[in-house]
Image (cartoon, rainbow, N blue to C red; front, side, top):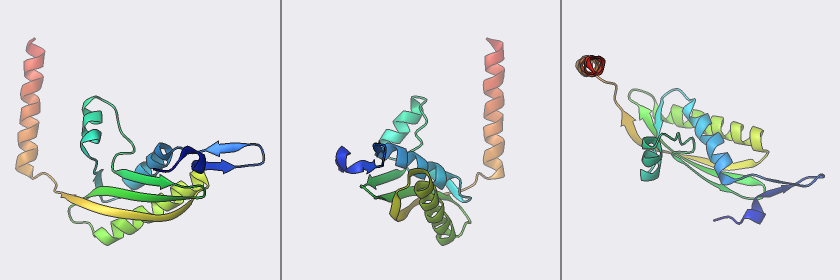
Length: 143
């Protein structure tokens, strides 16, 4: 892990400290804006945070922030039918630009790890989920 002192950016007026979590959030939001990204792939911790109602914007992102640079690892699930190299390239460009513009850090690399493919629901599955929602609504109105 990078020490706190090594993540400081000296300026004329003092020191600016940028937490790894800040860079993670910036990178995660930049990646999710790319067309073809179904979701970010997080570990068990990300799933627990969502169950508890907390939205984890840094889910699926791992960063190392140095004194002048940042190294980013992105873990994603892509939509079925997209061209994966194009999506990965767009993510790399978007994350690099967002992190550099917002933090002033130079991005050493952005590695994209595709960990799954999201398949769209079939029409049958969509109808079944709509029917289940209607049943739940009628049961709630009865109470």
